[in-house]
Length: 248
Image (tube, rainbow, N blue to C red; front, side, top):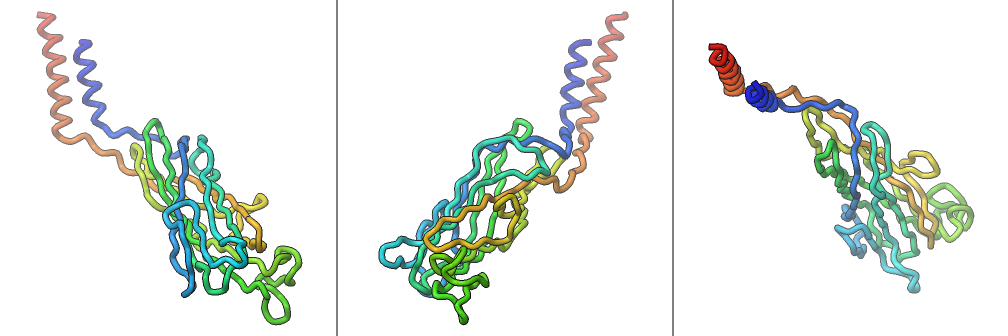
């Protein structure tokens, strides 16, 4: 009888397991690499494919402008709950006009463990970069509408980083009969999700990138194939025959 129970358990294990839509994910690490999607005709840049992208001909040795990304520390997160993917920083220096990028993409890779299984999720964040004229526009105003040499424009007109794809879902992955994906929810600054931010010249300005793991859909459980049902029937018959023989 004990042998029959073991064989029956093996047959039932042929079913695909199902888990609930809510789950805990253990994020092991987050990495990111930048790619330039568009740039001015005289642009010069370096660091593509890494977490540090630099561009522009520097003025009087003040350095290039650039972006950097630092992934968040490991942690456990519930699905459908925002968490920090990492920190995006704009390093703003005065550079020669016409040597800046105008659009870039940050490709994120998240290594995680879900229900004891190692997974990898990816997502992309596209940003538009506006390298403004430090001298301002007509009337002495800067591109942000503020006065030059005041406020965020204290060192010359500030430059803008604008998030183009506030929500982007990529790389679906399946566990049991549930399909999940990573969703980027936006930049977070001063406790608020923002679509853009302005950075003063000769300053660094950071925003954290927020994301969440979302349920996309359920997959119908895979039915036990006909051969599986025949196996179970055979096992059941063996169990019945064994019991009958012992009675005889």
